[in-house]
Image 1: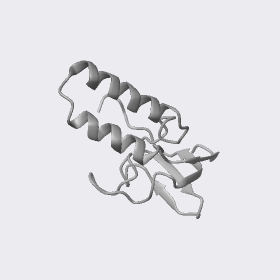
Image 2: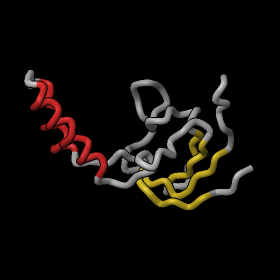
Image 3: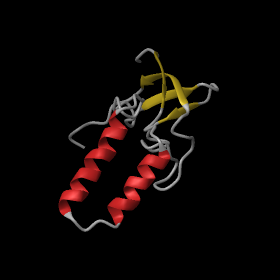
Length: 110
């Protein structure tokens, strides 16, 4: 079995909600393709500026995480986007993942 790896990062993605929400609001009401593309690029830049467990693509099924309060979650038991179902979350984006380890790997052919 793999050993624990210390990481001490927010699960993420972490971003400035007001900036993102404002850009998404404008994007929803924009019909011009050039404006839509620029807004999408702006949103991606906001996401890219923050380091997180999610950004490092570590949120994969089979990963056991331990949060700063000592709770452990198996991704695959909770979904890869922090949730326990498709439209809800078990913890916040800013929850600090103290350490993680891979406990199983999904077979690519199945």
